Length: 88
Image 1 (cartoon, rainbow, N blue to C red):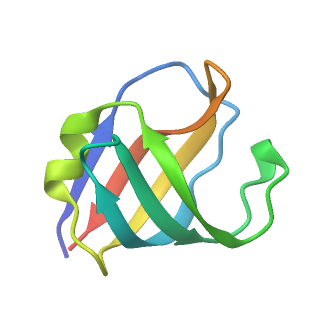
Image 2: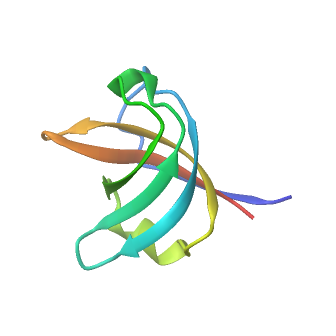
């Protein structure tokens, strides 16, 4: 199994990795919709939600149905994916 790991290195050490599945990629808006497990550092239950990505270039690597592991945090007031690992 190979994995593509993308990180911005924003120093979000308290953020924990969460498993998710890509449901929609919106490159124009710079967002990805993920169905995911609980995000403890954001006090967020498992759900499906659209997130901004720290690096819009990551959206070029994603396809609907991809399984991912990611971390998210609040950046400039918006829920943002700060690291992203695509499991191939």
